[in-house]
Figure 1 (tube, rainbow, N blue to C red):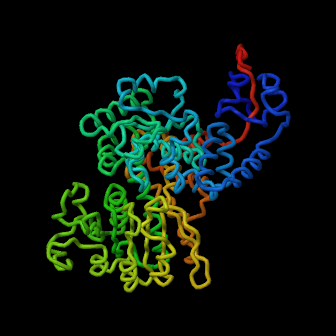
Figure 2 (spheres, rainbow, N blue to C red):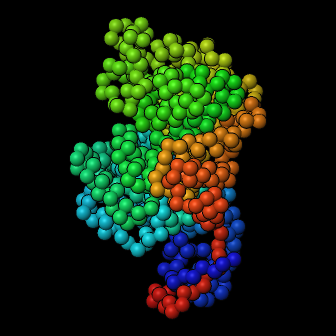
Figure 3 (cartoon, one colour):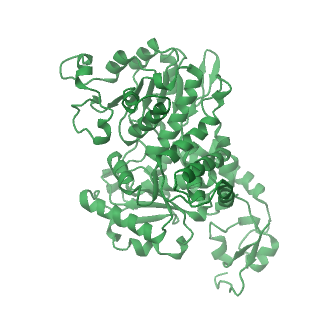
Length: 566
C-alpha cells in the first residue's frame, strides 16, 4: 500500500478530518508525528472503529440525532465516516440525505460546529474571487451549490440550505467514489424570507430578506465567473434553487461551463428508469402511457422532457409525445389560458377547447380528480411538495381504469409526500406500482410484504458526476443524462422478474455508479464533449478517480517541522 506523505503534526494532524485516523494511528506514526499522549494507548483498526461508531450511532434516539452524529463524524474523521456509509448504505442513506437532511437543514444552526464547504454571502460579493483563491481548494474538481431557497419540499431555509450541498457531496464520495478532497459544497447566502430563521437568535446566516431581481442575478453571475476563472474544468451542480431560477440558470450557463441541475435532470433520469421498470411489469408500452404530472415546475418539466424523448425514440413525433402528458399545478390542469404560464410549461399546456367540458362549473379550475376522470391515466407522478395532493378519490378513480396503476409520489421529505404507500395500496386494492422520493417501510398487502422502491436521485448523480469528471467533459449534454438513465435501465430487477422491486437495492449503488460513469463517459466521447481519446482511457480515468475509504500508511514530508502545539 502506497505511503501518504503528510506535513502535519500533533494536534494539527488529529484535528484534520481528511488525515485523522484516531486510534488507528500506528505506534510508528505516533512516534514520528508526535501523537503520544494526545491519543489513548489503544491501537485499533478501521474495523474496530466502524463497530464502535455503529454501536454509538444506533444508540442515538432520533433520526436527527443520528444525522448530527454523522455530521460530527464527517468533520472529525472523513475516512471513517465514508467507510461507515459505504458499508451500510441502506441504513445510512436516509440519515445523511433524504429524508433526515430536511430536518438537518431546518436545524442547521443548532449543530454547526466546524467549517465545511464555503459560505458566499451577499455582503461579501466583492470578495468571492479572493475567498475561492484559498490554496486549500486547489484540488477541487466538482462543486454542488445551492442558495437555500427551495430545500426539498420545505421551502426557504437560508444558510441552513448548506446541508444539501454537504449531503450531495457526501454521496459523490460514498456512492460515486470521488475523493473528498475534490468536492466542494457551496452555499450562496443571499438572505432568507423565512421569518423563523430571521428571528432565531442562533441563526448563522445573513440576517436579511432575500436579494432578488438584477442584484441577485448579478451576484450569481459573479459567482459563476469566479468559478470559471478559478477552476476552468470544474463540474458545477445546481441544487435546490427555486423552480424558475433553477431552469434559468441551467439554460444560461450550461454552454459556459460543465454544469447540470440534479433537481431537473437527475430526477428526470431516475424517474424515467423507474417508470420503465413499472412498464416491465404492466406490459403497456411507454408510448401508450397517459401520464399526469402534479407539480409542473422545473422537476416536473424535466421529467416530462426526458420521458417524451424516450417516447420519440420509440417512434412518436415530438408533438405526439408531449400530448401524452397532462400537467397539473397550483391552478389545476395547465392550459393555454393558465395565468403566469412559463415558456417551458407552454409546450405541455392543453388546448382550452380540448378541456372545456372537463370543468365542473364554468371558469372553475380543472382539478386532479377532473383530469383523472377524463384522461383515465396509467401513470401519476407527483413533484408538488404538497402532502396529500394525491387524494383518495383521485387514486380510486384511477384504479378503476388502470389494472396496475403506476403512482410515484416523489416529493420529500416524508412529510411532503403526495401520499403514503400504505394509503395508495389501500385505495388501489393492492394493485399500485409505487415509487417514492423518500424512504418508506414495506407495505403489507394481503399478508405479503411489498417493498417500496425509493426513486432517489442517488441512483443517478454520483455516477453521472464520476463519468463527467473522468471523461473531462467540457459540457453536460442531455444525451449524457439520458445515457445515465439508460444504463440504470439495463440493471433493473424487473428485466428478469416481474415480481421484483422496481429498482436495484441501494447497496448496489456504488457498483452502479461506476457502470453509469462509463456510459456517461462513452456518450461524452460520442457527443464530442470528452477530453479523453477513447474508452480505454476513459476506463483508466474512472479507476483513478475512485477513492476507497481505507487507512494508508503515513510518512513525514521531508524537511517538515513539528508543530509547536504538539
